[in-house]
Amino acid sequence: MCGIIGYIGHKDILSVLISGLSKLEYRGYDSSGLCVQNSGNLTIIRKCGKIAELSAALSQSSLSGKVGIAHTRWATHGEPSEKNAHPHSDCTKSIALVHNGIIENYHSLKELLEKEGHVIETEVDSEVLVHLIEKFYEGDLEEAVMNALSYTEGTFGIAVMHKDEQRIVAARRGSPLVVGIGENEMFIASDVSAILNHTKRVIYLNDNEIATITNTHCVTKNLGGEILTKKVDEVQWTIDAIEKDGFEHFMLKEIFEQPQSIANTLRGRVVDGKVKLSLNVDVKNVKRIIITACGTSWHSALIGKHFIENLTRIPVEVDYASEFRYRKPIIYPGDIMVAISQSGETADTLAAIKEAKAQGATTLGIVNVVGSTIAREVDGGIYLHAGPEMGVASTKAFTGQLVALLLLALYIKQQKGEKLDNELLEDLQNLPTLVKQTLESSKKIIDLAEDFKDSKDFLYLGRGINFPVALEGALKLKEISYIHAEGYPAAEMKHGPIALVDSHMPVVFIAPHDSTYEKIISNMQEIKARKGKIIAVSDKGAEIQKLADIVFKVPSVRDELSPIINILPLQLLSYYVANVKGLDVDKPRNLAKSVTVE
Ligand code: F6R
Image 1 (cartoon, rainbow, N blue to C red):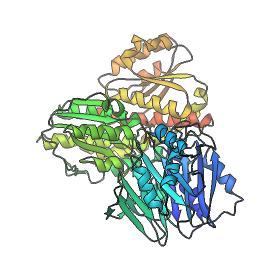
Image 2 (image 1 turned 90 degrees about the vertical axis):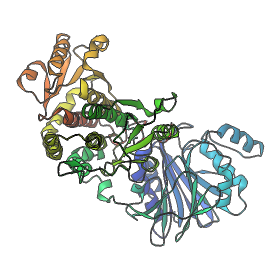
Image 3 (image 1 turned 135 degrees about the horizontal axis):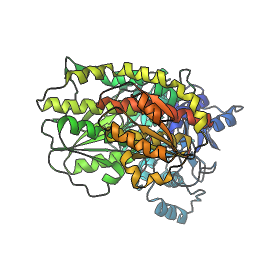
Image 4 (image 1 turned 90 degrees about the horizontal axis):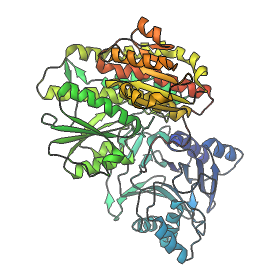
């Protein structure tokens, strides 16, 4: 949700800011803009649309300077337009601000500032904040920002500059910010991907902290003004990980990275027939587990319920984080909440963790981004180590989450003193190879994409542990190809959705040869009788061939691993259909990768 980068240093400021923004574009791409301090003035340039528009507008520019901030926007208040793009500035054009988050008392602040004579030009909540800073400015930007924030309700990650000061002031509450430390240069960014090609030394800001950076120093304080001593971390991600590496899109690269990303999630965690996790939390006596997440991560949670309940017989509840936080949840002593999040920044998931903690639950995180807010909020957890996921549609994080959840289920079983199934552990170790084979053989799905590009609706059906795969397959298709798709438990189809089926409706069945197989075959027959076009993902050959119009053949695996294998052809199907439609796969409309607002 909006990306911020700020820079002070000697490099070509426009290229630092634009290349940083392009790495952050996955966070939002309605509009973008930047501000550079130049001969005691602030020059602000803004454009509607993707970063390429801003970059084109600057291609002939000779603008230079040593201090600058930039922003890519995902609109919350005010339509996506040039006027509403960030940076925003005050009446005297002396201060510029970029903001990620929502100012909740925007209306009352606006009223107060207008009464005092401030002219507020847009409907964007962030604009009131820059006027509030102007109101308090008496020659010290840091002090003015601190004062303004003491009157601000809501969430913010901000970077602010003044025409007369050689520094950037940044502060956060609820929206991530990281300071990057270079040689005679400093950065501020929403996440490390924006600055990784300049430095790997970073300081993560916590909520209610403020950082003031010059080219050589970073001073961090709490919003009460006390100086804080912060740890400098070394980022492990490489620059290659945030490049497309010859692939047309990040999504395709990330799909084909899954053998490696799964191997990374497994690395060092299955040793000599034992599961080794440094959870930091005692799971032996857990009475109940609540898993919470949003979107694709919520689909992982549904599969995690199967893993944990089947292997440990501990009851598991799965909740959308946005529902959990607002419905007076009941938490018992001995409950553990597991929060799943690729980004580690999702606002609802974070709020659900805080709610569970406040009621006495122990919390665990299954998170990809190291050092993210959720990773730091939970009592313990498992990192995916899947590497940065840049495509807006989540792929490798999903399969990494499933592996992490399976490891968690096995670990709980082991801690309860029960013996683990060695064959399952071996199969798990062999999973990256099977994933590679499946992806290789699924490449031919590209030839089918043309046939489906004009479909209006898709139905995805699965049962048991593969029902969430149907949900995830449908989500992947709709978010990047804009084709309406619904995931349903196959047996529920007769209770309503079957009314939609006709010869124009592709119906995707996830049909592994497991205990639900016969039932799925009956469901296929019901669709065939209504002339629906059947696509089956299955490890079974001949019988399915007779019923289905198209079969995506996958290797036979045990039940626990089948969701990880079955989702692969569905990820590719959605990618190829969206691509053949000419859509921007990595930046689907209206979406942002990291949802840091409710
Ligand atoms: C879909 C997708 C989203 C995210 C959701 C949660 O492809 O990426 O549905 O899964 O926004 O995000 P995280 O996992 O970062 O909390």
